Image (cartoon, rainbow, N blue to C red):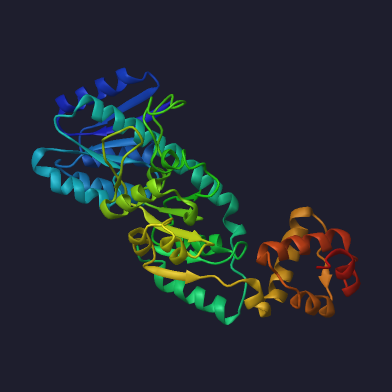
Amino acid sequence: MSRILIIEDEGAIRRVLKKIISEENDAYIVEEAADGLQGIEMIKDHDYDLILCDIKMPKMDGVEVLEKTKKIKPEIPIVMISGHGDLDTAVNTMRLGAFDYISKPPDLNRLLNTVRNALDNKVLVVENKRLKKKISKSYQMVGESPAISLIKEMIEKVANTDARVLITGPNGTGKELVAHWLHEKSDRVKAPMVEVNCAAIPSELIESELFGHVKGSFTGANKDRAGKFEAANGGTIFLDEIGDMSLSAQAKVLRALQESSISRVGSDSDIKVNVRVIAATNKNLQEEIAAGRFREDLYHRLAVILIKVPGLNDRREDIPLLIRFFAGKISKEQGTPEKIFSPKAIALLQEYDWTGNIRELRNVVERLIILGEKEVSVNDIKLFASK
């Protein structure tokens, strides 16, 4: 059951909206508020999945309702209702976090599509928050080397801006950690961070995954579906391995960045989105551009801030810290006493060629914790972690 609140001072419009929405789906519970003050009290007392709010109202206007709601219950999508003279204000509310706006008198299809899209988005936002609470402690950037210290300084300077960031570096270096730090230290932290692995999604499905699709747009599209850009509205989208994205999808991403809007596959309608884009790749995008596999204009849109994450061989002084961090984390996960690595064992691991970077180091530490003695020794490394 989805609970929807309509805040509108004109009773006739309120009743029409309620009738249209209620008849669309009997699983919708639709409630009414006659002004902004009443609406805010109802929002404080109840949990709503969607709010439709008029802009011009007595006592408290829709912009103030939007701002107050975003402070007390930021996860609720809010659709603004605008009269002809309110259109500029309606557009401005998108910057304040409104999901969308509809004009008076409301077009039936436009209204119902907006309601469905907003409710889909709410489900994705709540699920993202649940997962974020579960995994956020996993994202820690361990290291004190000059290279890592520089990255941390850049994050502090960049995080609270909306500047797009391109993160480069070999596989296994922790590019996703940088992306999570940028999001969690930003003003968007209360909104979702949505991750997309562009290399893991077939090229024929990447556009639908990013931008959503409408029913019947291709075989298997049995219903309208919101994409990742809509799910990230108000927050951050992390496009991992963007160097593997198809040229057609790159063109749509470029348009989304230029116009702050997307269109679902099979639809001609634009959907406004307020999303910060962080991208990452292990490829040399300049070489990809020269080969015609990556758009140069998209590269310049993405690389406002460029952060290069070094391989583990370039920050060997961080290896002792990483070993202790992984040893403690893995022992806790397995419910076993934490094992100590002897100084000579750590020194030997610092000499290894870590082609798999931090990901490889973690696997080796886990293997040594399972197979090694109470104090992991040089002999344990030679037996179980020899290169």
